[in-house]
Structures are given as C-alpha cells and as structure tokens.
Image 1: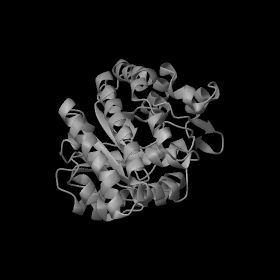
Image 2: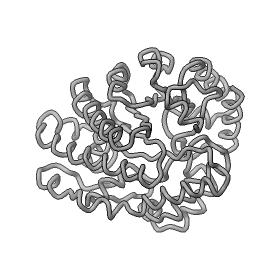
Image 3: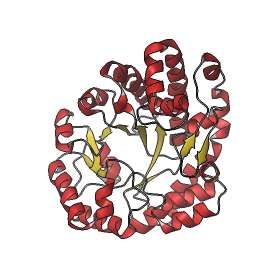
Image 4: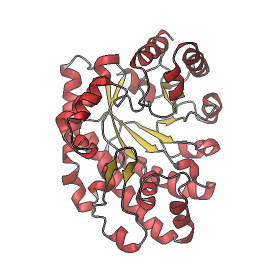
Length: 343
C-alpha cells in the first residue's frame, strides 16, 4: 500500500508521508510558464492537458507522496451555473446569492457535463504518475466543503469576517439550508466522480469553518461533512477522506466524529493538543506555517522539527497549515522535504 494511504488507514508511518497544500502554483517557475499562456484561471482548470501538467510539476521536482488535483473549490458553483471570475489582484468574484430565486437557479443537472474536463484531468494525472515513474504517489481529489463554498457565493467573493453568510444562517435559516443542501448533494456527486476517474483519496476543504459559532458549526460544517463522508464511504469503501476544518479549535473533536480518516490542522493550532483530542486511529495532517518555509533556514527547521517530534508514533501526514504562498523560494521546499524525510 502507498505510504500516504497507509497513514490514512491508521498506521504510524515514519518518516511520515509529505505533501503540501498549493504545492502546484505560482512559486514554481514551470507553473508560471504554463499560466502565462492561458487566458484565465478557469480556462486553466478546464483544460485537462494543462491542469494535469501543473498537477505533476511538483511531483517531478520534489517527489511528494501525494499529487493533489489542480483545480479550485469554486469550480463546483461554476458548474452549478453560478457566475465566477478570477480578477488579477482581487481573487474570485461571484454574483451575490441572497434570495430563493438565486438558489433555485442552481442547476445540479448540468454539473456532470461542466466538470467533465476536470475528470479528464484526474485520468491524465493518474496515468501520468505511472508513466513518469511515480506509481507510489497517491492521487488526491478534492472539493470545497459546502459552508466554505457558500461563503464565497453569498459574499460574492472573499471577506474578512463573512458577515453576510453568517447573517443569512441566523436570519434566514431555511434559505441558507436550501443552499447547503444543494451544495452538499453536488459535492457528493463531484467527489464520487473524481474517485471513478482515478482519485485514490479525497480532501474536503472547509477553509472558513472557524468563523462560525458552535451551534452553526454543528449545523453547517459537521452535518454536511457527515453526510458527505457517509455517502462516499457507501459508494467507495476503502477510499479515505481528509477533512480540513480550518480554525475549528476545540470543535475538531466533534468534526472527527463525522468519520473522516484524517483531520487537517491549521497553522494557528497546537498540533499536539489537537492530536490529543482525536481517536488514535484518526490521522493528523499539518501544520507548518507557510511563512516559515518562506524564511527557510533555522526558523523553518525548528518549526518543522517541533511538529515531527510531536507527531512521532501516531498516524501523521506532514503538510502546511495553509497553502504555499507565491513568494516561497523553491529551494526552501526542497530543504523541507529533505528534513522531513530524515525523520
């Protein structure tokens, strides 16, 4: 069994398997070369040959234990018919979803056709890994969790506090639940299609889970995750799922009860404290600060060794607590990999 899959099955693999969130991206010159030739980010995500190429680039360079599909969490609302544009220097821009008509306009029937190029990317990466000599590298598929995707849809893009989406959850709970139901069902189908196309493990990114009160967290982070995990385990027994409820804090224990095989830990959490909350068979993934990798040297080494020492002896996947930032020197990533693999 592949090293990452062994860790996700509850084995304390050492040295731990390692991959990094946003390991394919702007910090790599080979990625920038591909991106320069594409009109926009959506086009890159929906051109299978190019998306597969950028997925494989960090594997060729570093030999990570996992390749994660190059795409974006907002491709699902795009596939549902919600507008999406990535503006330079501004990030994603979407129409603000604020009423029943906007929810009713979402069309699950069109998703399979719209995401077909993404499924072709999955197939190309899976075959490419074998062809290029990386047969032991696990291919991870992913989706944004319903709440985080809803954040962008309701707010019309990013936000400092996601006040509009939180306000809707409190003041218009039926409307918000309708949106969450559509997104949860679509996420199940989307992730299932990725498995059928060749993904060997899955990850659910709930990047804004930590903005919610405990009651809303249970309703809109835990409940959808439990539905998604149950459905996928029924359809695809043996395909593990990593959940990343960013900034979940003490709610992480409740989140782990959804049945995820691993929990991703964010930069701001004490990974040893989080691990102590969790059942021994649940793997922990995380949680080096991406800016420590930018700094490199002794600072990066000290932070990484602290995490490694804390996680020795339990199922663990070394990763960051958030994605690689564009200003990261590629040679610092190489040094980090060397450090982790030395154990």
